[in-house]
Image (cartoon, rainbow, N blue to C red; front, side, top):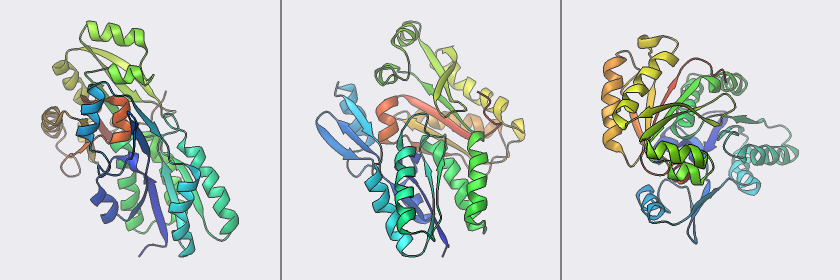
Length: 295
């Protein structure tokens, strides 16, 4: 039994069983597809395959963050039980949920003045966010106290690398993540942009690669460049994908062959509905701990 609670949002794109096994509180994002509203709740409300089918068919999709009242509702039972809380949010570079969590924490501190409620901006997304949370769970289980863990999170979050590859820019353009002009040129020339999450937690196109095969090969090369130990990298690596599991499996084989000292087998996770609303199908992402982001 831990003296404090680790908490994050459903946008960490980890399976429901992970939250249960690792004893992590989850706060749910929301999404709208057409005229229907859903929770991002591990596919219980809407599966990612159904989401993508409707998106491809032309239905508009939107997402909304966890609001202040929902955070208060999720946090209060732990505070009433005498637990402190360390909540890590989805990156402020792509969502405003950090502000809602902070407001909720300030409100609850008035009600529970003896409790610690820490809010950390992950500057991460999807299973990169999950990778950070997985590390925090390890350290908590090893006995690290909440203050030291918060300090660790504030440092480690800058080293979580996200290498994003997408073969269909339609939904990134619709969501304003990629400009219409850049997207049109990329589509015509069969260019797959290599996107990274940068220092402020936002997305930035770093390279433009011709053809999917070349782009996938570039992912493992880029990983070697960004890890502090190069091919000696010995921490975890996760892969995220939206309806392209075959590409994810192929990439896993390539990375595991190139990096023989990885901590365990690479885990492949589906990109969840909230993030998927913006990426659409055909997105592949590699997550790992590397050099500190510099831009």
